Each structure stands twice: as structure tokens, then as C-alpha cells.
Length: 332
Image (cartoon, one colour):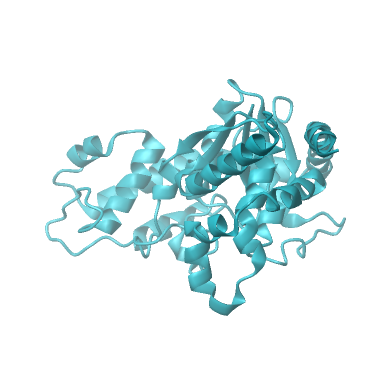
């Protein structure tokens, strides 16, 4: 079994797509997949995630995310697709695991250090304990594989550490220790305007990121404005330190075309930065247009989307209850 999740905290970017979403369709052929819309995780950054609603009361952001899952090839007949907050056992196990987690382990998490430094006094405790909820998401379903971006590796290592600790204390294999499937391409994609930082859906400058549902003309404009450098003649070569902008564009093109960067460097020898940007735009357009068409088709049918979440929650809850029952039988 395999678990993977994405937060519905905003419009998803091509970094989210390359990091996780583009792998989900093919994973369904090899594993029983559990795909989660992690709305509880999203609350650490956005408290108003449930605020935007349609006339019928459906939470817009969540249904947007689900429609995008489906457009990227997720099949609810093959996989369990559900909303995190609709399976109460996630928070139940979260509290239990809190009691088996050392505070020092949480303070050592790199993402917490970075985010708490940026947010200063406005840090909430959810940001600190985020990795424990993530551990709960995974351990609840006895999965043996977890698909995550490279930036989540430390959190998964903590998940394994917590699971081993509980197993050791009770001298039983209570939790399955999952192994990682790490996708590197998504975490390597940087901001178009500041290639020293990650491309993020929460970036205040919308021109820094390519969103999955961006208008095609807007995508072209964003790539046209992407940072390069002032070398003349143009030198399209990969060097993250000396040429971060060009290196980022090559990373994006390589990930979408599945061509090694070395081969791209040869292809773009004696070509211009405009040539590079045009090819990236055409490549991304070719991938995103059919996804967008499917997205809008699914998004129109909210009854169908809500039905997927309803059925997914039933399936997920059945598995989750088995784990919680096993735990409490042990405690008693």
C-alpha cells in the first residue's frame, strides 16, 4: 500500500505537479494507493481554508484540489481518495503519537526552523507538531510506501523513528515501518523571479510561480519575465551557483521533457535565452492544456466530487478504525 497527500492551501503549482501529482497515476498500477487531501495540515498556514464556499455550501478550495487530482489521472475506483478532516482517527492517533514524541525531535525539524524564523512571533504550535500529524496520516493505514517530495524526507524519518519507538516499548510490530519513494524534481523547482528560493503556491508575487490552472497566455508571460542573466552571447549551461536562473529553467524543462540536463545543454548550444523560454512554454503548455480541460469538466460536477469524498471517507475510516482498535486493545 502507498500513501501520498497534498494540501489544499491554494492553487497548486507545477512544482507540486512534478513533485507528487504526476506520479500518482502510474503508482495506481503497482500499489493500492491512498491519496489524501490534507486540509488539517493546511490550517497551520491558512486558518480560512474553509471560508470560501459555493452556493450549496461546498468548500471551494477542497473541491478544486480534488478535481485537479482527477484531472492528473487519479482514479477513485482504483484508489482511496479522501479528505483528511473527515476521518477522525487522524487526530485521534495524532494525540497518541504526541505522547511518544520527544520535543527535541520536533525542534530539530528543518522546515520548522525555517518557517518559524520567517514568521517570528506569529508561530502557532501546529507548525511545531505538524510532523506528528503527518506520522499519524501514514501509520494509520499500515502502508509500506510513502510518496513524498525530497523536502519531506526528514519528516518521514521522524515518522519511522516514532513507529520504532512505539514498537520497541510494547515489544510488538504495532506499526508498519514505511519506506520512502522520494521524488526530487518538484523540490528542485525554484521561483521564476528569485531562483534562490522554492517555487511556492503561497508566494506573494504571483509571477514567481506557474500555477496548474493559469491561463496559457499568462504562463507565456511569466516565463518571458523569468530571471536569466546578462551574459552576452547567451550561455545556456547548468550551474546553480553562477547561473541560478538558467539552471532553474533547465530543471523545469528537463523534468517535463524527461531529458537529461546535459542533453539540453548540447541542444541549446549557440541558442538564445528566448529560445529556451519558448521551448519551456511550449512543453509546459502541451502538458497543462489537457489537464486543465479535464479539470474544468470534473469541477462542474460537484455532486460527483462530493460523492467521491463521501465514499473515500468510508473506505479510509474502515482501515483507520482497525489501527485505532488494535492500539487500544494493546493499551488495555
